[in-house]
Length: 394
Image (cartoon, one colour):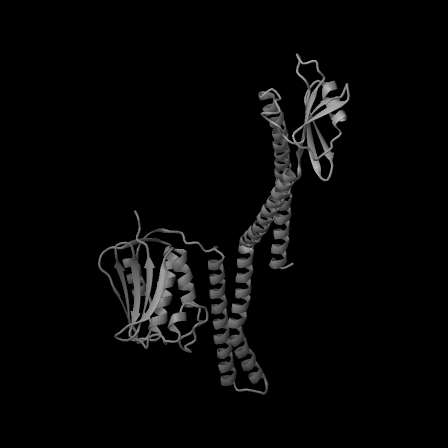
């Protein structure tokens, strides 16, 4: 199962859970909203009767429509104002009179209506019940409008939740994606690095075994095979080191380190025929770094420069918040086409046998220290590589 399928499944799971939660909230909101709209209709019906009571049921002061005085005992009805609906008045009034308290009744007549019946109070013995009817059409329209708004909001929230789930699933799978990418890169890099030496070994061995050879020819062939195997071993070792750095398994063990002494040590220990290697130092400069890893970087850069130049100079400069280690030479410099990509894997400036991984390893180690690297050609000729690190805080 690939990561894309897993991401889709995770998104579907998150979206389903969100749909259940949003659906429950929408149902609660619609139920609560509908109840409030119905309560609003009931309050409006009660207000009609209350306003009539305030004026003593005087027709000259108030004549609400669809309102009646109903006597279910004597079976007579006296309407107030205009009426255009005929509710079951005696049934409604008798129910309120029997129970002794006001009652609401819904009925259908060319639409939904709500009837409110108010029985006489304790001192009134007339058996007269006030009944008023409220058209629920407008309230039902409010209910439908509210339901549509809630549903649209729920759908919008579900869409946003699904998009967020897609993003979260991608973020949660990013470490796995990075690990797979590193694995693919390592396999591709290993195949790239081993292809040439293995081809040399095979061609040399096949050529030598094709017929009888002299001892000198066998020796030359074995030397060629040995050189190819050494190159393959060196390349695989560097690839494994890059893999460990990429996976975070080669984290630097930082301690205060005097880089001015480090470059003097490298300059004194590296020996390349016909190349002069010097170190220019001044003040004592300390950084927090892993001695073995930082020495490896400076030594590799020095060897790389010395293989192409007559003079190599190591120096260290401190600014306000940066320590810069410089490796400069008087060689041919970097090819202008290669320079922007010099820290990428397998980028070689020439065919002098390097694997093209040294600069990539240097970049990974310096970045693991929280620093940066840069390469350029000097205006006076030659190349310069700069390692930027933070000074020690101790």
